[in-house]
Length: 209
Image: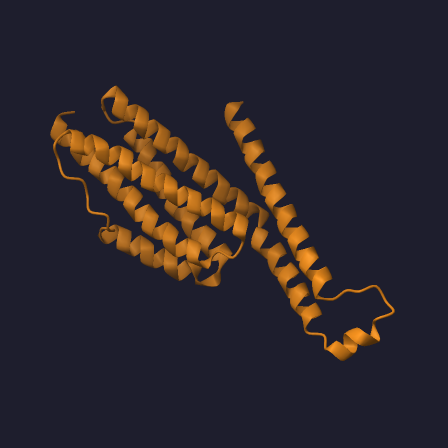
């Protein structure tokens, strides 16, 4: 593969990651589970790092890097992600699953290109990031974490809807007001976080096996 071909291939990967960044921004806006949102923010940073490390190779060849804006396909992906994310966490995760399947497939194909060893090593590292992204999103979807959080929020709202008079009538009973429901919601979120963390550990062990 000559220099012109290498640069062309690298530009296609950079554009892929640029498109992914814009899609992540749309999904992150609609995710209401902090643990999941924080994780996707980190994955967005991974894509930004990919843009930087691949662009460095392009610049090293004395060529211009792609502008930091989605191409036609990226605009379609961004729009579809925004549309599917309207429903909240579930829709956003499903949209990003499709997007990460595309990036995984493209990076897998990139490893078959005849690239210099140092560039191939970087592509390999980036592909490993993409695989990790997809595995996490698939795990969050499988656990349907948004359903449990929604039930907790609804229960909290039910407690908060009580009037002061109703709560005063229950003063002799164990208090089940706002403080209690808030604690239950916090406990549930911690439980979800723990399950996601445990899932990540299982996935890491599976990959090493």
